[in-house]
Length: 110
Image (cartoon, rainbow, N blue to C red; front, side, top):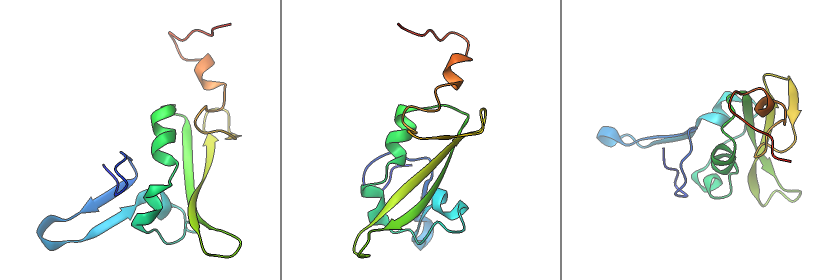
């Protein structure tokens, strides 16, 4: 679904049917320590770009609202893990580096 920032995100949901005004980030809702989501968070959220760059089915994302040191600025921080190798993914846009080796039809360029 298209976010208020104009990007497509599978975790964003809105419902305006018959007067409902519901907007939510389901990625942050899944995490008990996710924090309170605001539509302004979509502007700088890295999730739509990550999902566009890496479509690995084995990557699981977890998000939370992170406040700056002074508490003036909030942004979404992403934690990613590969469910196949059970390792933390340091760069979710690239992935773990192992899953693409085992997929049929992929070649490694040297």
